[in-house]
Amino acid sequence: MSKAKLKKHLSALSKEQVVDIMLQLYDASKEANSWLEFYLEPNSDAELEKYKKAIRSQFYGRNDWPKDPSFRECNKLITSFQKLIPDPNAIADLMLYYVEQGCSLTAQYGDYDDPFYTALENNFNKAVKFISSNGLMSEYSPRMKKMIESVECCGYGFPDTLWNIYYEYAED
Image (cartoon, rainbow, N blue to C red; front, side, top):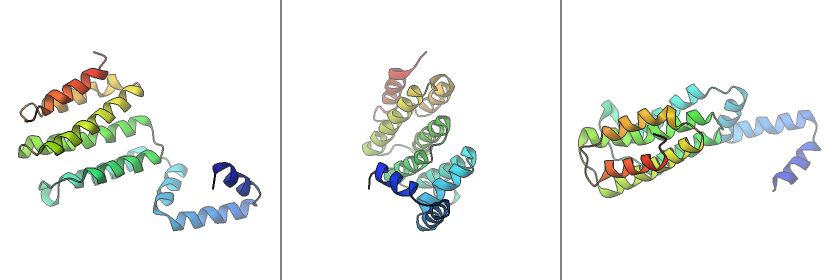
């Protein structure tokens, strides 16, 4: 159903009927439930922390023991958070946090395989592009530099690629 058709249908309903539909939607879908809660009580900080915790759990298990991360799951978490339509600053923070977790993992526990680095590079590129397009480079630049410096010891040209991505968008 198109948005126009949905809008026409909902406009024909009484306020009570629309409220009833919203309550049914709230109960029927976890995603709709989260979106409606965020819409009615937007708290980016609390939601951001929830998503950060979920991303961290993809990289570290119990007692901070490293594990093989699911990049697919991390990307789903980012997309899910973006659907809440939070402040762009919160999205940028989460996108960068995701890459930071991967950098932390490789800096602490040694080199990983090439696909690991490729996934992090691709996600760093998405993050920097988003940060730049939302005018947040000056705010996030020190954090990005610190993250890249933390992986200078890693192999596969990983830090070089991160620097190249950074300088493609950098304002300094």
